[in-house]
Image (cartoon, rainbow, N blue to C red; front, side):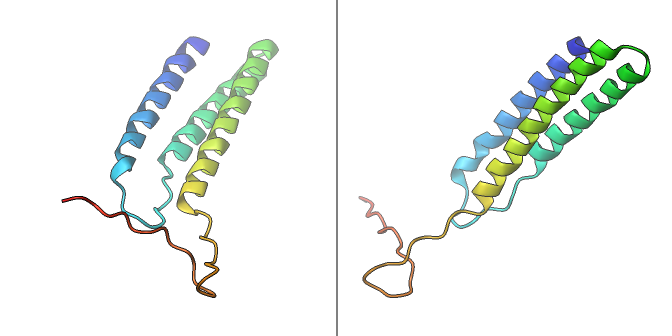
Length: 114
C-alpha cells in the first residue's frame, strides 16, 4: 500500500505547489481562504485511515500501525495547511498611528518612476 500512497502524496504536493504560483498578483486586502489544499490533504488522510482500518481488521497489525502513523503525519500536514491559509486570510490588523489617534498606520504609497 505504501507503493500506492507515495505517488499519490507526491502528486498532491506537486499540484498544491503549482496552484500556489498564481497568488503573486492577488489584489490587496484580505483574500478569501483557499480550502482546496486542506480538503485534498484531508481526503488523503481519510483514505489512509480507511486502509489502516482494513489492515487492522484483517489481522495485519504492523501494516495497520504503519498506516496509522502515515495518517497522523498527513493529518499534521492538513492542519498546517489550514493554519497557513487561515493566517493568510486573516492578517493581523495594522497598529494605530501615533500621529493620528484611532486610525491605523498605512505604509506610505511608493512613488513610481514613469
